[in-house]
Length: 467
Image 1: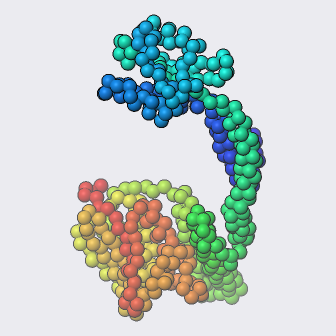
Image 2: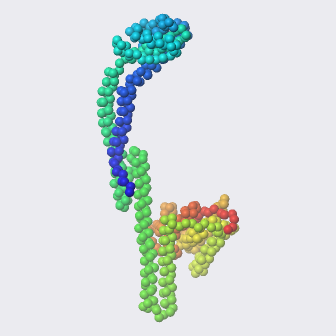
Image 3: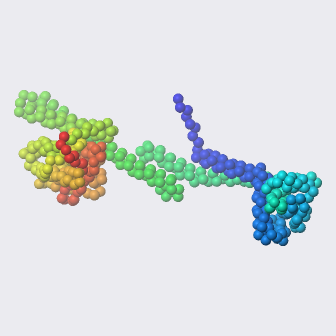
């Protein structure tokens, strides 16, 4: 069993992170300003002495003169002494006599010369004054040696001052962290808390709320914009759901009412009259067929939307499929004078789920029959372009307004919201078409001109070889 992670408020987390960050910064300050200050100071002075030594060596080698050594000693604050191999002084700077090498350093000078070392730096403590200094020794040439002495000023008092300051700095920084955390949390947490309250209202079905998109924090403003989009989509979906329930209920209730009425009529009135009985029974059968069609469409759409349907791809003739479908509509040509115009050209083969593409074409023709003009003409045509075929099904009706085109693929969408039973179909046809074509990843769309009709189309790749 997984343990439940205890969540913390944003304010607490911001405070925690700021305090941790402040403690890390302060730790570095304490380390480098107090604990490592002594070592850093020694390292700095050693580098300074070496720099002065290089300057002196360059001067001696360049001019073969010791005249500028006093200037270098004064500028860098060191004591300079030049000796020969015997330890005899050739030069001693006069600028800092009190810091010059004295008797207690003679032993180190003697060791350096007699061990024939090239370069050495060491730290010594004056046994009399108890002050520390760094002596840097280097061989200029086989007979001349350079010794530079730099005092290490006591930094204990400096460390005490820095320690005292850092105590105050630590307290102030931690207080500032708390204050900053408070204001940051107010700045971020407050709109998030408001967003949370509004989101809960949205979850309960309140679509009148609005998420503020003017927040000066980009991420919060973007999130609010996304939530507003979600609110609009949820509101639209909820409206369509209510319409769907009302329309499906209407379409279920109407045939059931008629079935019951005609069944009672057969039972009570026309059961002895064969002609009337047959007519009433045919009406019952028609309404059962319509009811069955509606149920099948609802189940089909539900399966498509839940991705429960797997496509069964096969290669087949598109011309043959369209011709087979149009043959089913001969009764409309005979009894209701509809005209179906199919511009059949060369035979085209495609790869798709034949049953599903048949359903698409069937639904689009049904839609064209329902909405075509008084001439009762329906056009089926296709265009071939770069191994793709675009199938178009057009009517000559009143057309669809630009505002409504984007919504026609929704279940039972009606511009006037007054649902009427279609001549053919259930009102779910275009939604089924959309889901099937998207499952095939085929491009599709609709073009409509006012009072000139509507054209539904979809595009499929052509297969070169016959099955």
